[in-house]
Length: 236
Length: 395
Ligand SMILES: Nc1ncnc2c1ncn2[C@@H]1O[C@H](COP(=O)(O)OP(=O)(O)OP(=O)(O)O)[C@@H](O)[C@H]1O
Ligand SMILES: [Mg+2]
Image (cartoon, rainbow over all chains, first blue to last red):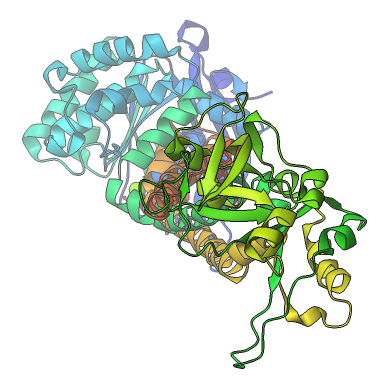
């Protein structure tokens, strides 16, 4: 077995990889056929803060969906926390997704009819956290993103920045191995965007593994490591 | 499991106006079914309540009207009619009854008060079998028998109210009543009769006595008590037995056929309402299916999010299916309530006792739930088949 990891001369000193992608392709069968991701080799290690930056249509979202087990590669190898995800049944993938991945979307994806607290607690419903624990843990997560005073509000009454912080709390509360963010500041003004980026810095400092996808150089600069994606291929 | 229910309840509760509109068809359908069946049961219960035994086994034969042809006397009932009927299979007791024309004679318990303090009581005559035929019950004394009848004995039996008005309540001292100037010995006092209430207010003497004293020519009517279920049969046979040559001249009163009445109530109208209810349920089911499908499309972002949070396909399917079952159940509950109110309301208006089967009351909400289940199957399957990436991009 020959992987990027083993070829690296300092492999032994590095923390364990969370993500290992080798030769991953994603082809959308057309017509017209689109090769959105081609020959991607990517390793993300525990505690790393990685940004993937690229122009519109370069395949960023497609890559994020693959990383988050929301989509299947057409070919290649993808191991998450050492688990070979290619051979998993959809049910197992759903469990793995719920337990190991936290998502932050550009458009927040909060349920409008539920309170902030319920929205955060929702991410523990499908991963078997006991009901009693959920609300307590959701409160802690909301405190962590500075929204203790908004717990019983509806999401529609919140500002964009606040909404994204709720979404981040939701992504964190199930204690994922990897936080995936797709254009997390895309819908925010610069002040709110900065607050979110500071929160990411904090999370990174706390040991969280982050992969932030963006077309914005300003956002990608904050990361510890940057990867550029062009036409579905990674450029280092 | 509880999580699925919680999420589904929250999903349903999120859109209250839509919920009400969605349940409407089911509410109407279930209400129509419950109302129709409930009223049917109530009406049927009413019939069997009114249909007590005494009424169901009573047949009365009277001379028919002569179609207004003047001068021609109405056909007379023969005195031996009881004997002719007695042997028929299904006749339990039979007797004649007549009201006497006593002219100006008043009835009194003291002699010589004719025109004074006498009472204007009805004087009637009967055969010995009359009392059995009308299920008469004695308060005291005895009925007159065939011997009294044949001999024309001057004896009478008093109706309950007649006895009260005459101030007679015992017969052991052989009290007498006077009709006009004639004295009659009271041998019995009735406590109750069924079917011929006028006997309660009458002084009743044997036919033979009435023939002698008041020239009674023929019985007014023949009372027949039949075995249970034989009334229809006897009503058909009685005229031929009494007047073999001219049975059509007799008028027969018999209880309505129970089945016929019930059919009348449950007939066309019921079929129509049941059909309407079924159509409303179908429309209701289609409505739920339609709205659930719409809500799947509308909530595609939510579906994507739930998948991202670890929901498998079956979780998504269960969510929408349970939501649609809840909508159906709610429609069923509301519909049942409306149907029950309808039944109670109509019963109240008609002075009926509302009768509602437990099975109906508890089963109908479940019917709504089943409709929700069927209606939700396709949308739920649709929702679960949506790819997470499609769902997330779509919103
Ligand atoms: N389901 C699909 N079917 C067909 N083509 C697709 C599908 N999803 C994405 N694509 C194509 O793949 C390419 C990459 O899309 P992707 O959404 O990953 O781009 P992106 O980098 O996220 O762009 P943006 O910055 O605008 O969000 C695009 O050309 C897009 O048209
Ligand atoms: Mg994108």
